[in-house]
Amino acid sequence: MVEPGALLYEGKAKKVYATPSPDRVVVEYKDDATAFNGQKRGTIEGKGAVNNRMSNLFFRLLEAHGVPTHFVEELSERRTVVRRVDIVPVEVVVRNLAAGSMAARLGIPEGTALRRPIVEFYYKNDELGDPLVTPDHVEVLGWASAEELEEIRRLALRVNEVLGEFLAAQNVRLVDFKLEFGRTGDGRIVLADEISPDTCRFWDLKTGEKLDKDRFRRDLGGVEQAYQEMMRRVEGGLGR
Ligand code: 5GP
Image (cartoon, rainbow, N blue to C red):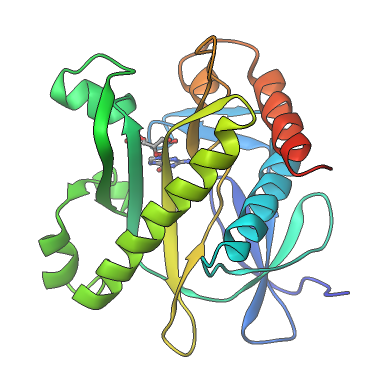
């Protein structure tokens, strides 16, 4: 059993602890919720446990489909051992339908179908509000090499295929999601961070009901219930 050591970092939704092994850290998921770059704050009871478990189930599913991830071992309801990686400072968003910031920025109604998935890159910088950037920005400013960017794009689209298909079978439309990638000690790109209702838009396939953090962001109510319902569907789909 890995016992978490010193606190290395505390973010908005997670804490990261050292372990005796230099290439492993422990992440701990909190119930704290923020939105709009920290301007809206609150607590979503049980969120930490859902996000920990759901991320780990998705990471294992993705590993089985050839996507390398940082996942090592779930320690408890809220804690997981992951590989220590150097995070690429770029948030990768994949979209299947127009929603959220894309719908707002381009004046497109939410829910408009896209002919094919769109991959977007955002510079991870809270002070600047995570601005949208182009692949050229990422490469020329040295955040990732051209080869790494190509690999990130390929993996992001593969995640979309695997999760999109799995979720559709659970009556969930994967509208869009955000991924983060990291470099391992030997320079390989792996999927990191989390994949959860905090980082994805999940809509019920039949009713269109929102089953994700937009319920918190937009004050729609039923936030905890939506997280629990998504957990139930994901576990059901994996026969758990
Ligand atoms: P949008 O750009 O429409 O706000 O977000 C697109 C998708 O990426 C949504 O599923 C959203 O949850 C996710 N996303 C984008 N940026 C962030 C972020 O900074 N934090 C989290 N938790 N999710 C994000």
